Image (tube, rainbow over the protein chains, first blue to last red):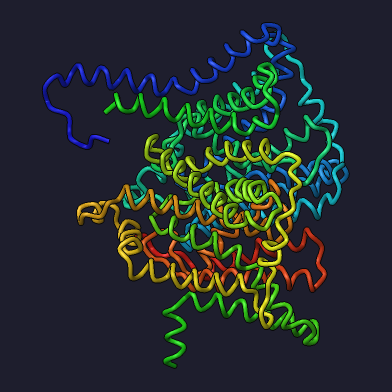
Length: 325
Length: 315
């Protein structure tokens, strides 16, 4: 990293190339998705169709929602290592209580969002490391999921099934849903004034506090939003799989973190991008299995593909950032 | 009064107090039955947590954001490598251990290479590395059913007067780690980097080299841990290291090491390791279901962290 300030000479041309690099960097999530899509189209042209996308992006909606959930905590410089087991817990509640006793199911789900808000308050007030707290909570959610649903089973509520099997004309439902999620969260976090405050709590907490904003409140709001999107992710997942299992969401913790980073988010400084996060989630969903299946790569290497994609995208980002400075 | 003040000044003592309380509660429940056996079992299981815990402690001490998430995958792969190299014959034990050590050290070195070359936070670097390692392990260790050599399996279960020999060796190792941390240039450099990386660099600490060594050390400890686990549990397994992600981080934090870096504590790792193992023993003795056990384990970890509290950020 060259920390030396750039000379004043050729400032304008440098600014131009820096702007170009920044644009390229912003486009990186979209470029990686395009690359994966082109590879799929090249390997199997028939997959690029209404039906093909419906199949390939089947699980993209819950992954995108979990990624957005993770993005909110990362915006506040924290990390949630419990989102995967939380999604599993929500799934178990959805497949049992939400169907059999809807009122109780709703209360439990709202209560779990409340638990997330409390965790945010606890982490802020006691200045705790979120990694450890959420690692501990991942055990709690997993245990609760097993208590709710000891054996795989249950059934999704009918209204949820009909929502998730909705077939809009022309645009496959997963793509439509991804567009809506990205647009709503982008507006809320990037275009409203409180969204700026939320991101500011990760960017410069001290400045925010001096300006009179409550950091306790921003942390509570960020964690509650994570809980909310975790609940949505679990419900969407059960709407697709129709039944639940206590371990159903375990892989989502790592997927969601990878999705946020692929989407251009950074661990510190409140630099996140909702649109990028959704694109990152779609890239991971596509690259994980459809692409590998078409390339005849055994499922053993699926996880490695996720890791390799992360490393490649981050390497590309380093090359671009080097020009940005 | 003086002893109370000493207790408050040394938060790591609490981890031993916690272990003692949990042990007493279990003994009270069983009416004194199996009190000694419980200690033996706790010591032999805590060893595995302590070894990776010490590695994780050095990494976490490097400062905020430094954490090795690739330990579970590393342990899994090293356990398979060790079993394959040993091939069930006693003459290959040392070679197998060295192979596991080398495998772990290589993973640690690759971790740092990613951090350094891609300038990404260690969490993401070790996470992406662990994805790849996991796949290598699944593919390499598929259907691997090699038993450890009898000599090695006996060694990992060997006890003298009810104290596992492995635990004694690990105590020696932790004393060495404590000396390295407090009295050697390497340890002092790690602490200095954790306190202020820029100040350490200006003071002439070879920041890059020390961080490289720390990640390699942590990886190597994960590797040796994988080999020992495979010996103790009589076989390698892809999932053998899974529980050590939480455990390695939890023992470091419960043991009084600062998550903000720059302040480490080796004895606390032992106390916390014993505490975690005895806690599981207690919950098993009480006969609670798997779900309740998970919930209680999680709540107790969150509770301990909350009680220990985080320090105020220096800036």
